[in-house]
Length: 290
Image (tube, rainbow, N blue to C red; front, side):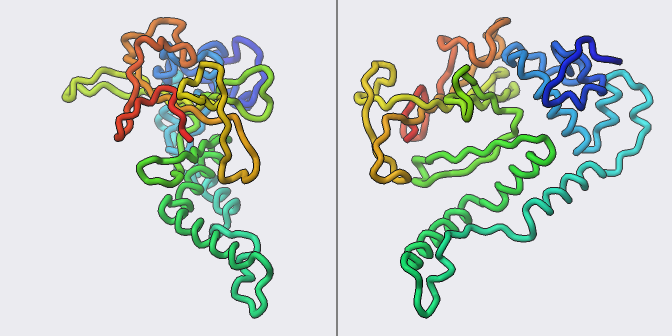
């Protein structure tokens, strides 16, 4: 099966796969979840490519080929070579040990410590204690393995009000949907993390889509982010520099039954959103996260 339309993009090297042959809605038969109306059409090739690569990693390439129409694919043996290749590349990338190091901290125990060495050692100790709490080594390995396998990985470092420290989480890049503006070249000012929550008949819950949005915007002086009045704040990581920008967090769910054609991830109806609430009672609807 050939491509119905010639296309060159980051996933063109997978075009020989029948599941990637349909440029418009690739993988719609093998991966029916990609046919959901909330998934933007321009994201489909990226998501389908992730699934193709994951199928090799999980010894399911034959099942994928069978779902694409190759009746004899299930007879082929898969011995885990793809996963071994990924793990080997990951090992060479990360080395045998990973640890947090602060420049100058190694001189703190010298007979004549260099200026700032004691302070650097104290910072290093605090960072290593934080890294242990957040399982940093495991998180890095998890993220880098996804990067080796899929070419992408997502890590979220965010302040946790309950733990009173930054927390680090790794997400499947298939959950990541950046919202680019024409003038943004380096990093988008708004990103979505979104995934489906299956129905739970016992709990009386219908199938939903959850969308977590991080958005950079002006600091609101009186708590209203859209009133045009910007406040000023100084962040600990930029001493002596004032900032008028903060990060707003929105965390909401929508019932799949409520979504219509055209209501994609960046156009979900706000009137049908069910916003999540933090343990302290704060509704996560454009909440100042900092």
